[in-house]
Image 1 (cartoon, rainbow, N blue to C red):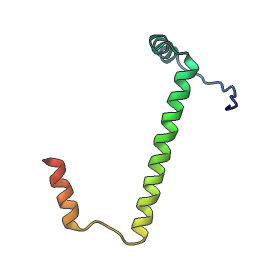
Image 2 (cartoon, rainbow, N blue to C red; image 1 turned 90 degrees about the horizontal axis):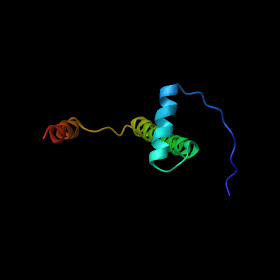
Image 3 (tube, helix red, strand yellow; image 1 turned 30 degrees about the vertical axis):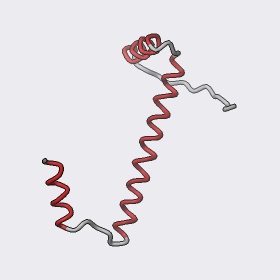
Image 4 (tube, rainbow, N blue to C red; image 1 turned 90 degrees about the vertical axis):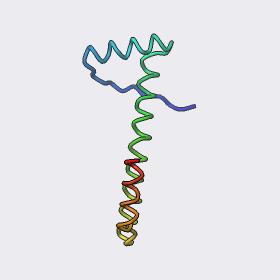
Length: 79
C-alpha cells in the first residue's frame, strides 16, 4: 500500500468550485481528481524531458535529418 501524505494547495474559488463540480459529477472526491491531475502532469513532463534529452544526444552525435527529410516531413504535414 502506498503511503499518503497531506499537502496543502491554495486554489482560487472558481477553480475549487469547478473541481468540486467535476468530482461530484464523476462520483469521486477532490483528492482523487487532484491526484489524477498531478499524475498526468508528472507523466507528461517526464516524457517531454526524456524526448529532449534524446534529441540532444542525437544532435551531439551529429544525427540530423537531411534537408530532403525535413522537406518531406513538411509536405506530409501540409497534405
